[in-house]
Length: 328
Image (cartoon, rainbow, N blue to C red; front, side, top):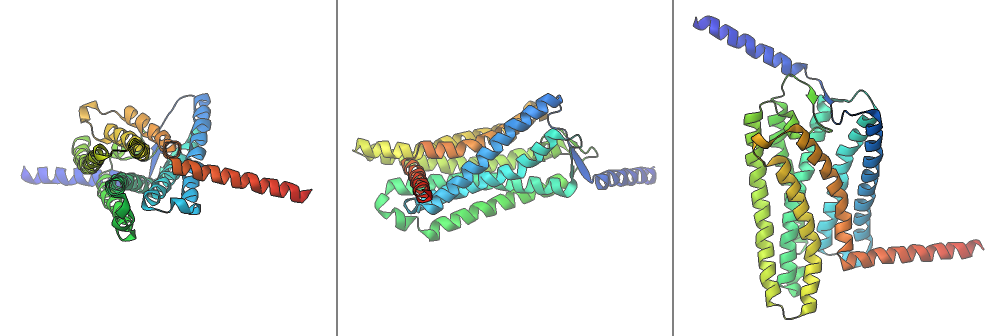
């Protein structure tokens, strides 16, 4: 009796291993509506993608090119913009191609690579936003010592630590996800994300909930504590102009943090009873739209960035005039 049970268990394991090894590609089901809807979505997300890449890389070039923006606050912002441009370039091109072709397959390695890079960049951004909150506290609490307190020996390790944290976090999920792939290779999503790839919903969703939840708690606490001290510093200010400047500086970061963490919490940190792949796909797609808002948020609410943009426009206008007169 025991021998036959051991044999059947062994056969079952071999079948399961065979199913796992046979998964060499995945089919991204995504939005499976009519062709007209797919074309509309292609045009919409192509416009979003171009705006996101141009806006974020434009922000990076603006910070590099304007000497007034050469301080830790804008170095953090340039890294954030670079992360957003990279994230969009990892996820959106594959999605655009799938809108217009019938074969929506992606290789096993391609899927694993896409998920690893996307989650790494997303987690890195989470840590980076916390570091930016600490940077704002240091700048507002003692502005005269800001350049000393937030020197390159401080902000460079913070940026590196954000990347390392993102890589370590995603390594856990990549191993956990792709060593427990179920037999079905159909993914009800527009990209290779963690939730639709989980083979064992109960076990892996608990892993997802606890690890992402712990990261969210730590980073949100850093943000809240930093802004708690910022609030105390504001209450000690006697100048209305000083308070206005602080609100202008911190408002854009708070807006970006709220949108980012709100999206992540809804996507990954919720009870499994409330979890559906359709909702996850919609929110994940919404996140690609959220990314394009960052250049707008950080440029419209920041006086230094607006002045730098105006200088670029004026210089280009002057160069065009010089070029026009020289042709005459």
